[in-house]
Image (cartoon, rainbow, N blue to C red; front, side, top):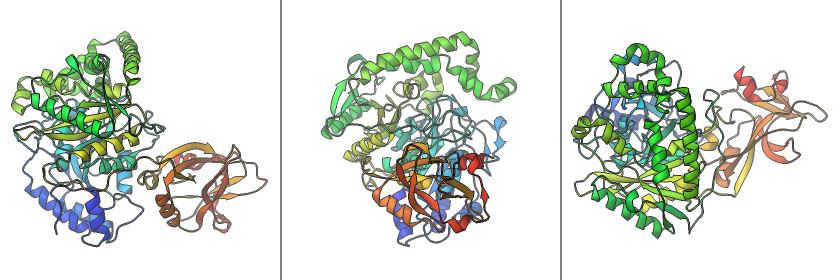
Length: 596
């Protein structure tokens, strides 16, 4: 069976659909590649071969159209919980067994993904280089002398080597973007809060984002959509209204003059300049910005009191095990003790002042186009000067989460020595979907292969622009945000349009025997109840048709009146199916029932 050197979602989906191969076939290829892999530092732990075969067999022989990641092998950064494997955060003394999957892992599994294992990282996700781990330093797939980028080092190398089709990283300062640049990959970093961090060892809890590495923007975006939506376990997760970007004629901010810093790497600077030309050819207008307020904001992440958040994340462990940590990481985390509560407030005031200054620059542009990293370093150089060189790598990434932005890192080409460079498109909060379309267009304007395979054509079709011609469907149960079937909406490009309540004459029951558990909603004219929680989602027309056609009896779609008097097509249940069922109307919705 032939599979591309670097795996992708389109090839897998097409092969499964056409019966060319099954998940068991694909997993056998993955297992063979795992045993042949030449970089021993990619993994911290993984499921054994028989467990992977069992997971593939459990999916069955034919694809499930309701599971958008059916049969797709993936890797998870080892600061994200996966049942069956320890979570170490690259610190053996910290290792603990995961008692339940992180929220995002549960959603990926529900969508049909197969978790292969847990990947290496800069310890406690502290670093942008990938060389701060007792489990070894993964290397760029193009030259073993050079860093892979971090902290999501193993996650990027696993995809770029063709061991999995996508992987999860985390991103606080650029950890989901810099490794993409150094391994010829796409790195999608969502707006903070769009994807929940429940079950993740935090670095800076208020800033952390779960990120996705893949071969194309389309693949990474599909995975991000499956994971999106609030979770009760993460107070920072939230619904984020989508923000549009202009079509042709968009303005993109670029570096100019003294703001251009590549630390002597003229070839990476040239890759950035070439990307500017390509984006202009796609209809954009380059606008020079003053990068100073963004740079000053970036400096707060490690030079300001946000370092204290890294200590807050592991304070009890640090108090008794600091000597067992990587010395550089321990020094960074231990440096948090110099900050006081007053410093924290003053840092917040400084951030807001800088935010106001960056607003003036955002008023000039719609997106930013920046180098992902100004250069790349050898492992030897990084070990000789670990603090300063790591800081250099974050010059154009550190501000993004502090300012609540979305970002997509894409490949930009190669230097003469064969090492890759990358650029990143950045948009204000909520611009994730629109930014993905633009980033995909820019990537396809200069394809550089996929991961280690520089000659591979980019798979899949170009991403379509977010459509305003969406079909509204109301959901009341397992399809709500954060519920087990929500991925059936997000995975096809669904957007949450609003969260509201039904009119008072609807009743809710627990349908007996439903897996996963589902409610049955019936209208009872004259009944005066509290109204029921309902979310209205917009689906592309073709996806809406498939979604409605797949709804099993006794459920169906009918008109439901909302509390404001409007109507929406939404889930209703045949009345006979709730006879004798447990009524939960008084709870006001399915979410409160599930919460117990």
